[in-house]
Length: 103
Length: 358
Image 1: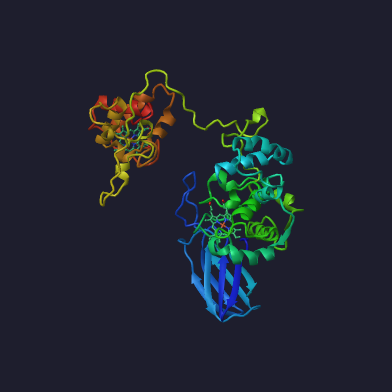
Image 2 (image 1 turned 90 degrees about the horizontal axis):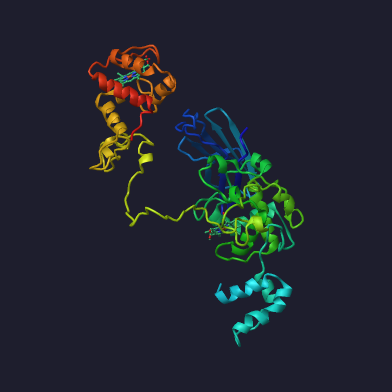
């Protein structure tokens, strides 16, 4: 299973800033290994972020996103102690969900 | 640091006994200038933390405290997770649990990581402590208290999964952390960068011998330096003909390599180069690469197959002339009757000699 994401969420003046560091190879499917064989594509396709139970961000990812993607975004609202949940799914069907409390 | 204070430092590093001698040595040379540094002045300078942890201040700090401090003092430049590539290469990234076990960062050996992060490279945790204490934050060096450095370091180590999230780093357990540094076994000493005597004489490095192995030229030496931009002969065919690999439109044209066309002006092409040109001219190269299959097998594959077989030359000459199929697959080679017999012979001999470009 994939390594956990690192997430930090901080509320300030009614806006919550979320920063996420994912751990993923994000293999494009374009590269070849030393013996010339194509390295199969393996990348995150979808990402969702929820504040408590409401979706605040939903994104489609693709092979042009770097290894170990870093994502930062803000949403209106959110208070200390609220839950922020981030999940992704990749093209092989692997997935990962992690959560933090807003600081 | 001025040259003057450097001299002083050199003298004082040895400690109290040296300090006692210092006035007699340093100040005889600079009569009437300055005074010996006091013990507390020396102490203020002496902040280095060594790999054996000499100089490490007492203190402690948790990962949680480190998060707060990192956000305030470091994240703006190094990123929330030490991942930023903006002011400097990332502090964290590219290390694995396996590296922590082996003490050698695999991505440094395989070249897998696109970049080298601090935690991939640094073998000693003391160096991180020392550097952060002495030099960071960039805008306010030496402003952090020892406990703060411990906390920030605990956070950095947690980001790399060297220590758990509930860890408290202190002068008491930092040695155990050293045993988990991902690249702790990655330091080499057999080179000239270490000052002092070589390892053979009780020092660390090789005694300052440079890496280059330049041998003084004693005869038939070049008289003048000629600056050119050229591929050396041995590299001509390293990547095939570059001219063919670039688009024929736009500004950039690949250089002719691997064919005699690139040979410089007056020099007559070598026999191998002439045969390569012949292979191009007679269309063999449309179906055969020197080292890769196109329609037919690569010349190196042909060579590998027939190496050491005495009748190979005759057999292959007949095959090229008459064409045929079945040895390398179902695709046939058409008869090459348009090529003269002696040219076919020349081409086959060339293939069996390795299809060299030069």
